[in-house]
Length: 219
Ligand SMILES: Nc1ncnc2c1ncn2[C@@H]1O[C@H](COP(=O)(O)OP(=O)(O)OP(=O)(O)O)[C@@H](O)[C@H]1O
Ligand SMILES: [Mg+2]
Image (cartoon, rainbow, N blue to C red):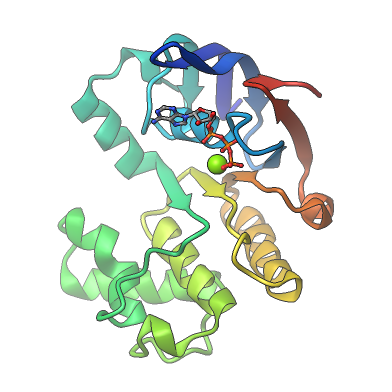
């Protein structure tokens, strides 16, 4: 299993955001999480990605037991293994799309030529091979901007891609383009994808899905 979540509870103060979540995701699977607002979907994604820590329970991702890691080790783990994509794309408007995608590599100290090569490869994988990499994000459509964000998330070759409502700001045709991008990444990189969505139209793209309610998985 690429992701194992065992009886995870998460309290924010007194408030139980997660109340005993157990989930297993095999490697290379596109796994979707559905459920109403406030049911704990983002909280679960953050715990899988090592951004947040469970109050109780065990989390193993890419063979690493996250409970055992210090904050520094968690940061290192995220940097190596996890890519994040959000509803808002969080691209830097003054930078070109190529520079946006290169950012995580700059943080890793990858030399310029290598950065450029990897960023262009990631843009290609995200289905943006035809777009001028010198363009600014605002010169692209919403779907293209989200695919730049996806390219940035995969440029470090993560094992796991976590996506929180990645199509929440996109119309349904554009959402499908983004889903095709995910399917392509799964096929070409064997990456494991966990996606939170409200959109039932996207279910056919998911290999598996679960529903959450009140901090629990209900089916
Ligand atoms: N940092 C926090 N501090 C306090 N409460 C929080 C915090 N983060 C989330 N919560 C609470 O935990 C519950 C679950 O939040 P979460 O963001 O996981 O829901 P969600 O399923 O992602 O909802 P949505 O579909 O609206 O994004 C909510 O009731 C929320 O108010
Ligand atoms: Mg959420």
